Image (tube, rainbow, N blue to C red):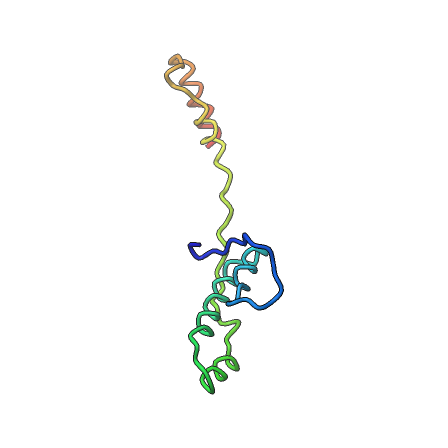
Length: 109
């Protein structure tokens, strides 16, 4: 389903019609770069080439050829001034309260 496997059935003895290793690896929490590389390798293997060409590919399998990607940084905490600004309702402030709020925001920046 949309490139994902949803296991809805119980496991039965016997062989599967295809490999589910990449999907299981994703469920196990392997890094996205490993999953992407496994998909690339699986795609090459599933092309169905036989004989010497496939043997050569397997022998030369570049498992570590994937370009290392940096995991995205976690979102940073919003700046204190932005948090304070979000809590201000200017429609409910007097001019004096608005001026005091402005000075508080300036001190946080």
